[in-house]
Image 1 (spheres, rainbow, N blue to C red):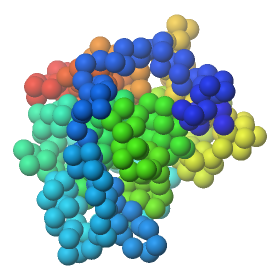
Image 2 (image 1 turned 60 degrees about the vertical axis):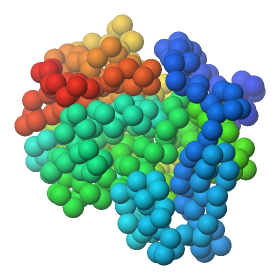
Image 3 (image 1 turned 120 degrees about the horizontal axis):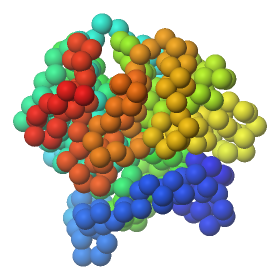
Length: 378
Ligand code: ZN
């Protein structure tokens, strides 16, 4: 395989043009403090739960002090698991994860409050602090944002060591939000598509040890037979709320030239990209564009193309009939507005263990939401 679907075993075959070159240029200090905490063998690994179907039975496995524990999971032992891992969901929600199909049309209107976070990359502590300080969750990690919509703009996977914890929290929070009339939108980033396509080059070294202890490839912990894997396979790559588009990397003019609307992009990703071999993708120009550096999960042109002009973003927004586009993926010092908020970049470096920021949109007014809870008008 080539391009985005490259796995770490295949990187020596020359199949890593985009992924690794971008990572090297823009993200070279991946060894920020705390990101290699599992480097020596004396580090104690705790991880899980991984809940999945096997031979028509629901099973759970987790790692406790470097040892693998596996059990059948039933209504009778679920509370033990729920309490142990602070899960917010109920037993029946585990089954619902297998029943929800992806929704390609993602267009929400009349939403007063929107909060956004992106590129949390396994940094659970920073993620929870930002959500608490910005009024999205309470001290018990439960939904506090009422009818507001929380958008998680991709790249929960990779680099950091608490990916599992973040996904389980979002899994439970999603249901709590709906009960309050709000929503959680988890959008897929390039790292979600990579893991779901068996590319594990960027997993934290803790998860290499998890692979060893479980005897399972990391991507198989998120297989379609698993609760979180099935749930992730229902998530879109692009959505819009009110007059704003949300997508991990960005929408290039090339995507507009091929007249790809939101519904089509989501459909192509789910039906023809995620989990597919590159030999399949390379036969179709639409699929090639969606998975190269001008594709929605990879694009960095807003920030790095010196020839990018305001008239270009005007034509892109006109095609989608929207006023703003919010993206993650490209790290900026703080939440950044380009062309008077026509483009807003919200990846403020959580992957480098910086305090990070959230974008808060209240009645059409944009604010930076800081890690101390302070809000600064954008
Ligand atoms: Zn990314």
